[in-house]
Amino acid sequence: MGMAKIALVTGGNRGLGFEIARQLAQAGVKVVIGARDPRRGGEAADLLRGEGLDAEAVTLDVEDHASVEHATRELEDRYGTLDVLVNNAGILPEATADSREVISTRLFRQTFETNLFGAVSTTEQLLPLLRRSEAGRIVNVSSTMGSLSDQSNPDSPYYELPVPAYRASKAALNSITVGLAKSLADTPIKVNAVCPGSVQTDLAPGQREQAPLTATDAARVAVRYALVDDSGPSGRFFDRDGSVAW
Ligand code: NAP
Image (cartoon, rainbow, N blue to C red; front, top):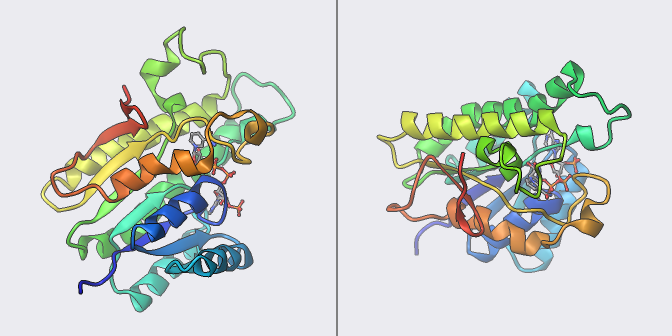
């Protein structure tokens, strides 16, 4: 019997990340829930263990370099390797900003700190562990709102949505998906970006009530590329219907 794969999901304590963690565990993966609040992380892992799944938690605030380093050491001590990293932690502070500024340095910094630098920092620190895997996989949870093609398409359902910092953070995340895939082309590691669709979570006010997709349905695309086989793609962007234009 082979050893179970090990996966880390950042922001895995609730919303989409929790469902990604659950479905990875249902697929037989040992899943580690990254959560900035240790209590919430522990409760989420307990919930999955209560379903008979193999889940643990690690404290991980993607914005805090020391926290990312500490979580990395913890994973190294516990497992010595990492097979799957899902960069899921993300925020949309523009949804609750008081002012309807067209562009705001403050909101850009805040958004990029989590959505971009959080993913960069986590990936940077965990890459040595992913290199030890026979089939390392990185999934960046992005958004069609980060697609420049979609942003300039008047027929897009998101065309009128003014969240420039969020869009730019996901466009940048898409860019590093391509760059990292190229840099890692001579390794087994595959890096892909996914858009889960519009999901019933608490990312923005009203999102849970208005979004068409349950987290259960939306998580599937992330899980697919987290477990994609050796002949699968790298450096690409997918949603549940297939390839998404950059
Ligand atoms: P959510 O329900 O608000 O959950 C966000 C998760 O990220 C929470 O677990 C939160 O932890 C965590 N998080 C935020 N900042 C963090 C930090 N600094 N360090 C560690 N964890 C942090 O949102 P969601 O909808 O599940 O979003 C998950 C991902 O999907 C995001 O990247 C989002 O951009 C992307 N996405 C969502 C949609 C959608 O329609 N919902 C569409 C496209 C893409 P706490 O519990 O501690 O706050």
